[in-house]
Image (cartoon, rainbow, N blue to C red; front, side, top):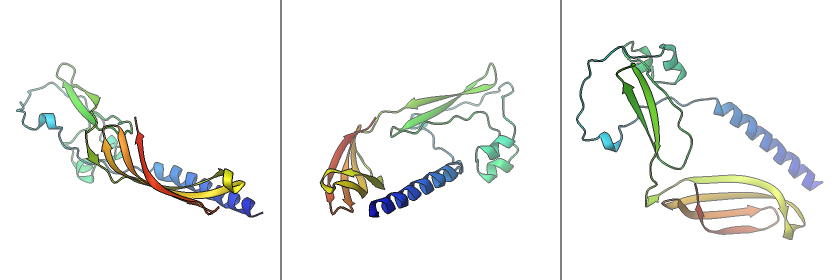
Length: 177
């Protein structure tokens, strides 16, 4: 009966988590001004006497979550917007203006991984499943803390405890792509 109760409570937690995730995933964070890429840092630029530029209606500034100052400024226009796929790799997005058509194309480049980085990314979670020594189902709480990254290799600390009296603590190394 105890296992059934634990399973029911864990099921409620999972269902609640899925509902919360679904609700929160629809909330978008506001857009922030991106810094220029390092390749443009010391480059000279020119001012074009250009043809008309293709722009989107001002309504999309709100939909894209641009800052209030940009939304209210009639001189600021959206010319392009592209989603960046989630990844552990750094990316550079570049907008290219076509003076012949007045359009802007976005190009996304996956940048190389760094040789050495010190991360502080972590994860905590709960799991429910079978454990051989416990002769049945156990609930497990675990945590992980990334400490260092060398290219695609990540290393850090890992630990977990379960309701069958077991625990584990140690280090990990894994490749991510």
